[in-house]
Each structure stands twice: as structure tokens, then as C-alpha cells.
Image 1 (spheres, helix red, strand yellow):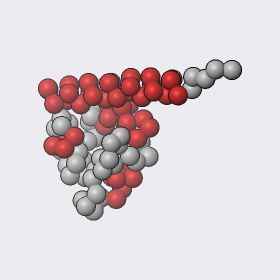
Image 2 (cartoon, helix red, strand yellow):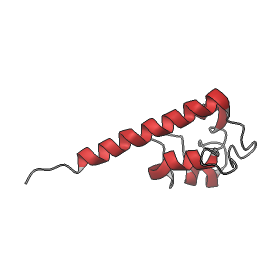
Image 3 (cartoon, rainbow, N blue to C red):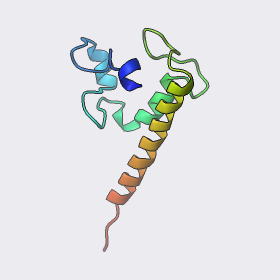
Image 4 (cartoon, rainbow, N blue to C red):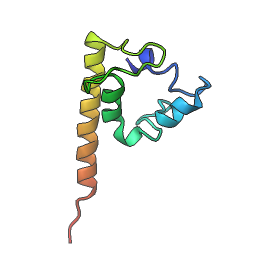
Length: 94
């Protein structure tokens, strides 16, 4: 889904530097200044927060149905995994 809907702007070689600063798919985990909050950003830009979708830039709202569900399921799983990783990183014994 990311390749189909996002890669044309959010990968190097597209000439879209502003898009890459926000969210870069050149590596995994994804980079860019929204990378630390990518799950909530994805929900927001795809309209899953109840507001109109703003992405993909060339066709806002194009991600629908099963495609949207797959991306939102990924965002939820990513958020859970990173929350668990952040929690375990802060564990230490005194």
C-alpha cells in the first residue's frame, strides 16, 4: 500500500524534498520529522480521524476500503511495537 500510494512522493529521486522532510520511505523504520509520530500522522492524512483526507497529495482520499484498513492496521501495529520498545528501553535495575 505504501508503495502504491506514498512512494511517488516520499522516496528519494522523486524531487519532492518537502515530502521527504515530512516522511521518508527510503529506509525502515521510516524517516522524516514526522517519523516519531507516523501512526497518528497516517491516520490524520488519510482521514481516519474524521477530518477530510489530505493524502495522497495528487488524489486525497484515494486510499479506501481494504487498502485503507491495511494501512491503518499497520499504523496501529507500528505504534504498539514502538510503545513496547520504548517501554522496555527505559527498564533498568538499581
